[in-house]
Length: 406
Ligand SMILES: Nc1ncnc2c1ncn2[C@@H]1O[C@H](COP(=O)(O)OP(=O)(O)O)[C@@H](O)[C@H]1O
Ligand SMILES: [Ca+2]
Picture 1 (cartoon, rainbow, N blue to C red):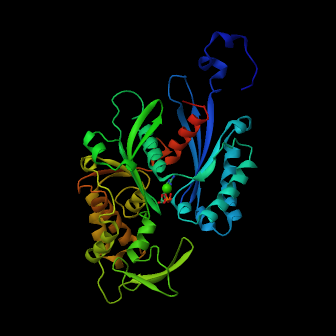
Picture 2 (picture 1 turned 45 degrees about the vertical axis):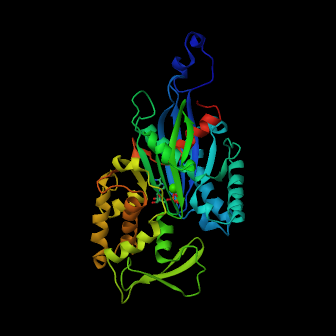
Picture 3 (picture 1 turned 90 degrees about the horizontal axis):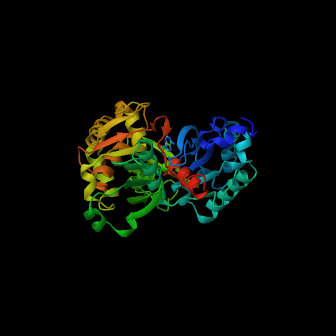
């Protein structure tokens, strides 16, 4: 399309003018700097008419491992991984829109757990990469995201993609995100009772698409899947003595190995002589969650969307199809945990942590949040071919703040 002004343009409202049919296409670039990887989401939107929500046309998605926090001592190298991903956007966005396309990076629990100094050094290097790019770099374009926003924005994404944020009769769904270092739960309370019995810092009002939502949301730092492994081993926040061995009944008896997390080396292994299997393992993971999380009564009867590690572990054990996802009950995780933990030798080609991970997920859902055995979980990686990630909600929020949409 050229910028030539056609004589008939004055006769049409801007959005209906034939030569402007695509003039209202715009882009947004959002980076998710997670604890286990960095991901780029390049979204294309079309605003078909001013009174409707912008329509999401598509997404380009790419990811790299490990995450930025693995470069805590080489911030330039970390920023280099961001630059590689950003080069994809150069190809994806038409050059005449570069200057209007905002680019933002938000880091989550991995950077929250680093020292302030190391986290800031990484973010500074990333900011430089952005400034050297041809894209629009808004204020606060690089930073650590608030845990409560992580939950809210994922909730916005899922409910937008499933059509619950437009029109009447909104029936929103709650969301569960299980990351490497933190985990989030978010839903829209329907009962006055829930609002009354919930601690104030678990409730956040959020404005999006001309509506205000008062959401229940909380991010539990240290309750992500990988942090939970350390907690189960008794190694979380420990001064690790050289050569110290952490053992668990959730690991294969003969196992002895090393694991690097957050820049620390841990030695871990199975209970050579002692017990292994689901029963003792479940008692171990129970200690990590029991009494540590707020349990809203209202969620017992409702169904939730669950993603990230909930999805990955369900797919790893064939509870769901890796591409399609699926619907599970909480007790399906428990059944699978028993199967894996009581037959660890049969699963020894998979991760040695598979039993611990499934037992932790079961304990987190049942004893942590207080879900019932029959609570339904909708496991989805994509809706209409778009990733179910907080990044879409964050992009809407960004476009709104830039006045590119309302
Ligand atoms: N856009 C995505 N698509 C698919 N999986 C994702 C996406 N974002 C995160 N994940 C999954 O989330 C889990 C790790 O969470 P991560 O975001 O790295 O940690 P944290 O949220 O604690 O910083 C992994 O299972 C990873 O595969
Ligand atoms: Ca995440």
